Length: 177
Image: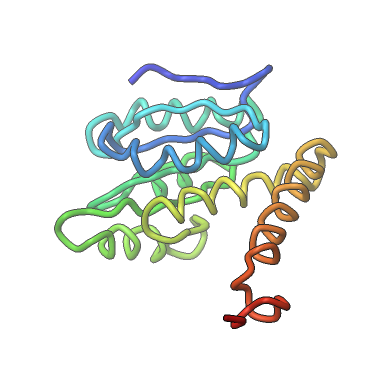
């Protein structure tokens, strides 16, 4: 897959996946980044089939000054750990649900990194991809006022959606028949 970039300038976050079949899961991260106005690029990189390309991408992530790389992988799920071994850019691992073990194998492969090669690990599947994007946004928000404002607004909308639900416990109409 060629790099696909959605950005008004240079990408701030890299989103990579081990194979094209992981795109459905990783689309959750892309949607969050797009909604928050954070430029990103996305690629397919395989730790097993394209290791030289993976190493090259890791070096490129540093040159581009990416804030984070969100790496989704299923099965053996070596992509996030291999990226972390090649770059100082924070790597956010997303276990992709697999057929064999429903993503538990991916989760364990990503979360059980040896000391010295950290990978922040998120939930299996789309929820993990979305949370990884929100975490990348939080990293950027420490130095980017625009991202901070959009992230605060996102969280306020999320809270308001719960509070405005008439079935929210504590709502004056909750439980009323």
